[in-house]
Image (tube, rainbow, N blue to C red):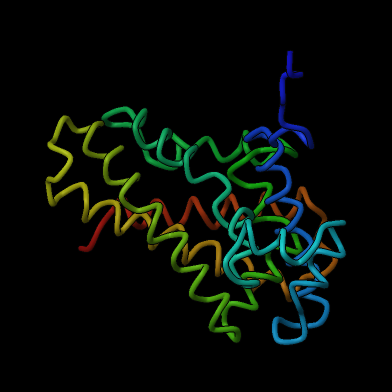
Length: 216
């Protein structure tokens, strides 16, 4: 009887491990971009920093600029869920509970954008068109989820124009706040992580309050 044949080699990576690798690549790419610029950074350098080949890097990301996406998309799902649970009559900034989040070192909404290196990345988007495109795309892709959450909260159809406009205003306010924080944080290199989170919380509170008030 012939011996049963079986596949050999490494077992497939779990989705959790794939997400970890994507984050490792993102952090390595970010460090290199900040240290030497985007043009001087290669896929080989990014892979070497993580301990993988450039070919593996390109299996996860189509371009070197897109390698930073996992850092820029952190918290989008949390934002949508918070909008969905936002109670009628409750101030929007209260729904996000910024004071509690600012005190938590690992808060998913504030920790990544408030990190000094991510702030440096956001500042790079002003001068690096490729990074700017990735930065804007992350917000563009998050907006429909925000619109669906707002529609669900209001009991409106998913294709209703009103939550779509509200989501666009909210999304623009979020982006403007993070950019404002990142740009001004460059002037205060002595700020520690707790101070950075508190400042970002303050800026986000101002942005969301302004967006919620609308145009007068």
